[in-house]
Length: 72
Image (cartoon, rainbow, N blue to C red; front, side, top):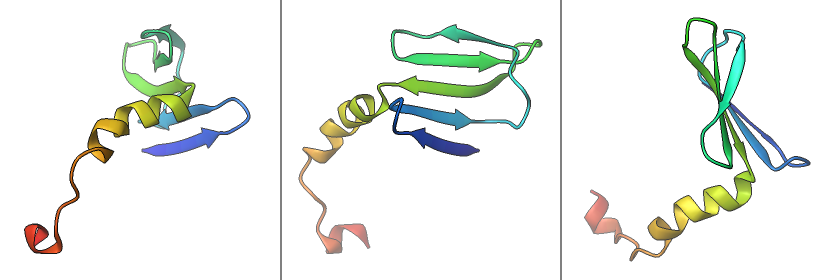
């Protein structure tokens, strides 16, 4: 898996496979899924990535941090 961020476009590219995608389909307003001709998912493209990632992490970041003794 390879992950690359393009700051100029605020896009996150997540490559699941080195295979070349043949087409893409929108999955909501901020995600494009790219597939091979046989329908294998090879890449996810997240648009407006900085906002989307913050929105995903916000509930986690609001939680009370674990004490060091809770981790071990």
